Length: 145
Image (cartoon, rainbow, N blue to C red; front, side, top):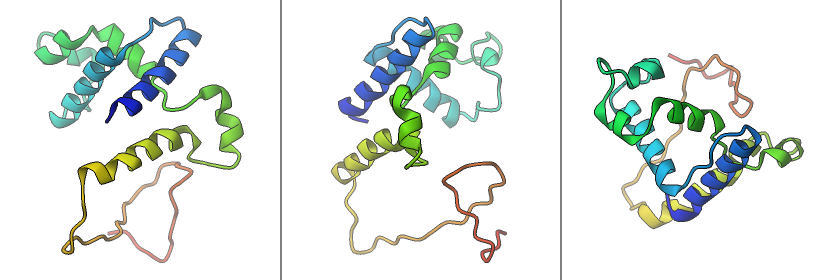
C-alpha cells in the first residue's frame, strides 16, 4: 500500500467519522489499525470477539499497545474506501462501486512489486459460496467439490 492508497482510505474514513462524530484518524493510526487487522488474521484470532482481543487473558500485547479497544471498534465501524455521498449514483452502473477506486489503485501498484515470468501459470478458482454477493457469478454447470 503506497501513500496514495493510505491517503485515500484515511480521507474517506475521516469523512465518515465526521458524519458519525468520531475523532479523525491519521496515516500512522491507520497503519497501526491495519497492522492489528493483519495480526488478527495471521494469528487466527478472527473467531474471537474483539473484546477478547484486548483482554489480559486472551489478548495480545501488540493490540493493547497499538490502540484502545474502543478506538479500534470505532475505526472498524467507519472504514470506507469510496465517497459514500456519491456511491448510489455510481452503483447504478457499477455493482463494485464501493471498492472500485481502491481496487484500481491497488491494481496499479501490482506491476511495481511483481513481474510475471515465463514459468508463471494463471488459472481460475472455483470457491463454494452460498452468501449474497452481487459481483459473484453462479455457474450451474461447474459443480463445487
